[in-house]
Amino acid sequence: MTNVTRYRDQFQAAVDTVRQEGRYRIFRDIRRKKGAFPRATWFKDNLEEKNITVWCSNDYLGMGQNDCVVEAVKSAVDAAGTGSGGTRNISGTTRYHVQLEEELADLHDKSASLVFTSGYVANEAALSTMSKILPGLHILSDEMNHASMISGIRNARTHKHIFKHNNLADLEAKLKAIPADAPKLIAFESVYSMDADIAPIAEICDLADKYNALTYIDEVHAVGMYGPRGGGVSEQRGLMDRIDIIQGTLAKAYGMIGGYIAADKVIVDAIRSLASGFIFTTSIPPSTAAGALRSVRILKITPEVRSQHQERANSLKARFRAAGYPFIDGDTHIVPLMIGDPVKCQAISDRLIEGYGIYAQPINYPTVPRGTERLRFTPSPFHSDVMLDELMSALSQVWAEFELPREKVA
Image (cartoon, rainbow, N blue to C red; front, side):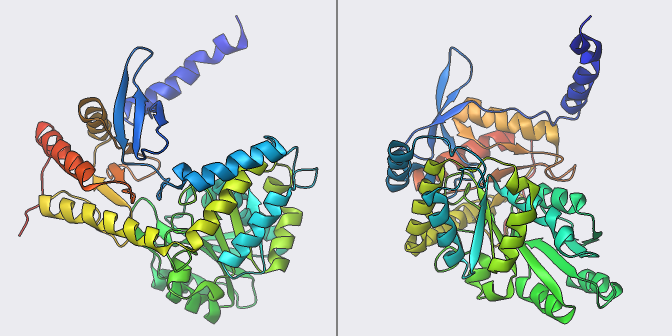
């Protein structure tokens, strides 16, 4: 008997439990069609292919399909090859990385930035390092923060405080209870991607000033999408100068992969020097950095793309509202359609893609609390009125098929 055989039943039991709870995750095998975003091909099995429309991509602006970005990636491969060759310290710093960090620092009006291999790593590495820099640190974290922030804070040897989501009174009560001379950091997001709401950034900054706390904001669902140049919600509201550390991603609006922080150069230098998640990880390929650099530069000077994107999101919300669908009618581009049952949520997703060629992935626990399962729609500037018509027709039939309630429409 091999060791795998000895323990196989326990691994299978873990998977079976997830299946029984209705939250087993199915990875759709798709291939996007360059130049036809958000159209794609779904490989249902080795014998059947189906044309679909993707409604759940985090490539919010379709920049992963942008001809100029694709050209930048190809040119960098031709010039520098594929991999970076090592960590940033061991040959993995290229001219593309340096230029990208300069561009990101400029985007957020900070003196420096630092690129990581993903947004998750950026959060985990930066936050877990804070206690090395600030002994006795107290981190105050919004209860709805992303798993990467939670992981970083958990791994920091620090005092941890969880405040109620976007609740300023609870945040202040916790700040007030901390010794006045103790170092403090408030960690929160701008756009909360599952509930489509936005943090009260100015008010949090006011509390940070009052209680001498640093501010750390996760703008991954906002960079490239909000603000005159795509600096995020903090830029849109004229608050970037009040945020000490801005964290973002290159994997959503910018259509690439990677994450980063932007801050005062002494903060960035300290994290660069002490964060294990940065020091010991091979850097992103030069071609990825080149594509991200091009994408950031394009979105800095094309605010019309952001306007088109918001118009499409508002159009979908207006149609959901008119049809009486139970969705979270928030202030962002994310449109969560509430189902409330994991089994039904997966079944509806299956029905939409198999019967109508519409891909909307179910969002289940632990991404969201049990009982709040949903389909998360993210319309892009390229989702046409015809695609909206197709979606609404399909939802109407599927909603009736599953006997789901609608809200009364005045």
